[in-house]
Image 1: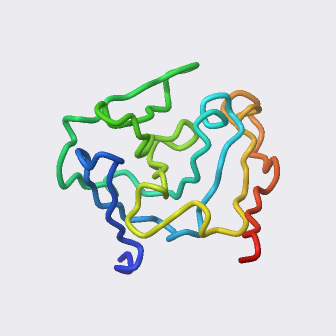
Image 2: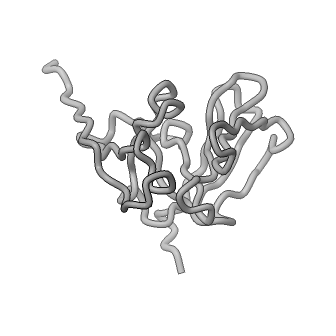
Amino acid sequence: MVDNTDVRVGQCHCGAVRFEATLSDGFGSIRRCTCSYCRMRGAVVAMAAMGGIKFLRGEDALTSYRFHTGAAQHFFCSRCGIYTHHQRRSNQDLYAVNVACLDGVSPFDFPEVPVMDGIHHTNDTGRPTRRAGTLRFIPADE
């Protein structure tokens, strides 16, 4: 059973889409990716299992985008354009949730974020997922 601290509520920018996400490993699974789409989007994500996202309102306001193999499905609000989550390509039983959409969470809350090599995706190479590096946030002195 998942601890309640792993259940987070979130929404898009305009509030049309509101959801509850049960994070599979809390924030232990945060990451970014170097694939062309994720690189442009720049989101930090955490994982939720299939069925781990429950829509409180606005599921009908979501639209989706697929590219390359079409396996990954990226969801975003059709009104404000904010990316909320996506079904992963490498493990279709997992969703990656945009942590910036979660209430009270910022991608800048994490001093280090692992960056995965999406350019050389495991489904293309047949090799294990490779870590490309680490993104660091160092707050300025106040």
